[in-house]
Image 1 (cartoon, one colour):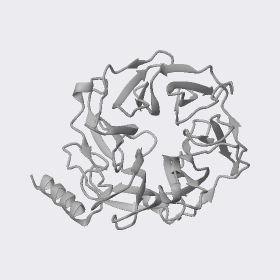
Image 2 (spheres, one colour; image 1 turned 60 degrees about the horizontal axis):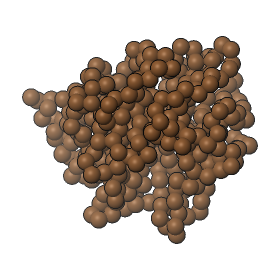
Image 3 (cartoon, helix red, strand yellow; image 1 turned 90 degrees about the vertical axis):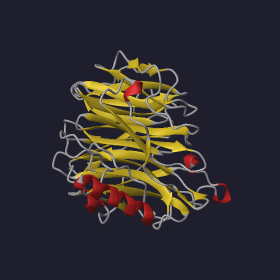
Length: 364
């Protein structure tokens, strides 16, 4: 009873402070209990779509994209961040909070004629860091998925992933000595893989014919891929043991009533699978739900709203959540990075920035 009381007090304090609405959940999770909400980027341009991992040496790498348009703030003078061109930036630190003060670096060009709005980064078993970039339905005439490699302190020029012309949203994971890249074309979801041994790309495999904004998780030797429909009508889940044969849930596993559902991402939190996503109306906020039986839509808990994304009648977008595992093999998510258009005080909408929630709960 004492621990539950402390958690409730912490949640109430954060709500009253206008920082975020945090769930007081029974199971340990990245937003349970006390924690710190920190603004990482402060550029006046539009920063978005973080991708973060912990390398073999323990270093945390955070990648994100930064728009070039001088208008900077969504809806100001007709600015639409979804249609901007982006440069790729990154920071490294030995501890997650250290990313705030870490030196910001830019992945060097030359860039293809590709908006590079969305990125997915990882370090594979060969030690090479790869950063995949796509238009995310943004601008550009070279609309393949491209990737950059970082090895021995140097970045490569971008290379196109074969067969990915007109690819939109992307994600990338490693499994069975291969790098698997998930992407949608024309709102149909595909996966292709790159063998670290043969250096060849496979032919694309269809996962679902009506899916977009997919994110992948490898757990227990299986793929778990969450996605939504082009209309944002609920979050569904597909699984596969080998990346070739896929099974999808008959109904969505999450659906915020009356709103559209975007940017789903799945993580394993102990024995619990936890989903984060960004329901959208006038504002866009972060939400979560959890299950011990993920392929059973009825097993998912009632959704909980995580962020306010609103001050008075002023709303903004909180989106593209990215849970960060504690270590490369240990389950549990001590941090969540995401994009937010809020100002530091949470009272107004400004340009997009990368924010970080770090749990200080004893769960981690």
